[in-house]
Length: 301
Image (cartoon, rainbow, N blue to C red; front, top):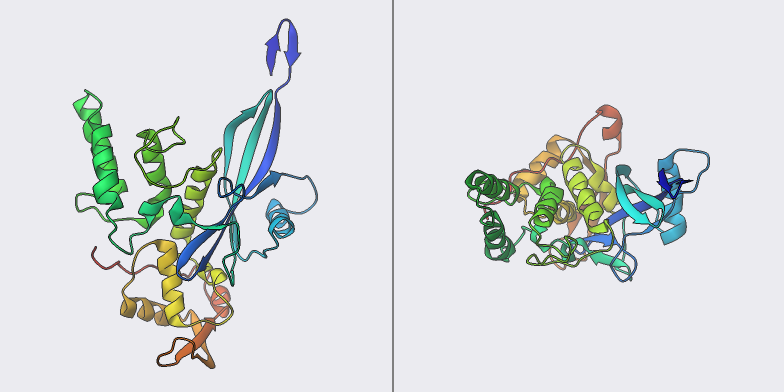
């Protein structure tokens, strides 16, 4: 509430739903966008009965036509103002499947190209590492400069530190702090498409949450059709994680956790030896409270 000229102006606060809807198609991690890729699907929060999560599901279906499998609330982002009003953006992560990439679906790697570690394209080593070093050196405080270098090394897997896929949000926030992304008052230096408002940060939040979640909950199966091959399961996990997995270790882990069961059918579309089709064994959810597709150690880069 603010006072102007002896009169009291009450600040109005409104809430808006923002959906990070993700899928995987042809080994590409996708996110549903609007405004020519500049925004995530969003709209005003409508009061009513039932839980917010249930409301989110029905809202997404009405707005996009997609049925969501797994849904989880992320965070509430504040700070966007319009005149005397402040807009709270309540974000959700939702998983779905797509049979074809239609308008609105974009690879999330268009926004965060450094998050794909399945091939060495040099983005981190040749572009981001030097830019972060220049940022670290902008301060005359040697201790602060060293802390910045340490954060960059840990966050981006430099100097023999492991690449941790679930640090997608921390990586974006470090680039934001370093002024290397357009959202940071017109910063530059890091590749990737910008987004309006806080939506690129919200997308990074969703990626981090999903990557952490698949390490201990079988939510990745919500991004697959009813039946699939073990090869497609692995490439789907690799697309989400943004890193390659050891084939034998991955299949051994899936078998040990009894995550899938054979359907008795095969996939002949690969052109080679027919591959067995399997499906998620949903009894797993009843047998164990917490089980998942823990990511095996990635192959050395």
